[in-house]
Length: 291
Image: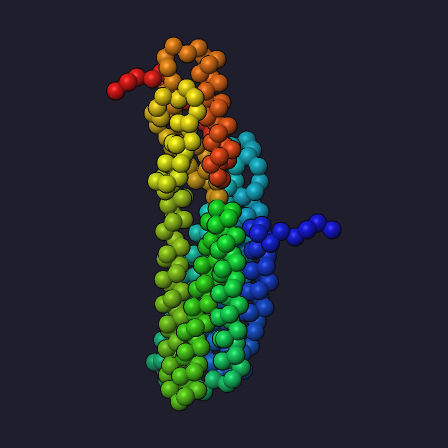
């Protein structure tokens, strides 16, 4: 029987999906039978988590497909699209929860939540914070925008459970209006989280330049190759969890075509071997012209 690697992105996502399904059922039942809108709102958020995590898993499966004639750079951006969809799902959930909470406040539909709702909120905080830390670690390890987005989805659920816990406690102490107000606070946290997730993934889809630190590492690695006199141009394109690099290096003009090709091959080999998450490298050789 093959050993399960819990630091693998797909395994981590499946663990998150199972956890989300169990929590969603538990929290919705606790909210309904515990007379707590804040917990029902939190349960609805967990239902959206199930959809978000499923989206991430599909994106990971598509993203790992090799390059083909129609997709010469591979399918890595499927992860980015999945992360973008997760952010939209979170945003829609936050809006729905907020509108529902406002309606309850306007109609003054207040009830005293039962102990089961309180227990569900406390359990959710512990479980979802643990899932955030685990998933974020896996996402960073694999440089996966989809898994990192899923991690922040877990964190947003933990935050919403904190708000639900405060509202339920307040309602049980006769401050009944705190329960729907907590539901409204949950929606604000969810919307804020979704906006924070949308920005970086839009940047990847728009082929935004990677961080300066990554470009500096690529430049330093290429310059270590014997024969490279200067870096004339550098472009790095993010493809999901990986990068493709297009780099122009300057070499002595007196080198033969074969010698220039050897320098280019060494640059490519070093970048593939020493810079993390590099999928492919295209090296162009130019004659060195002192400035």
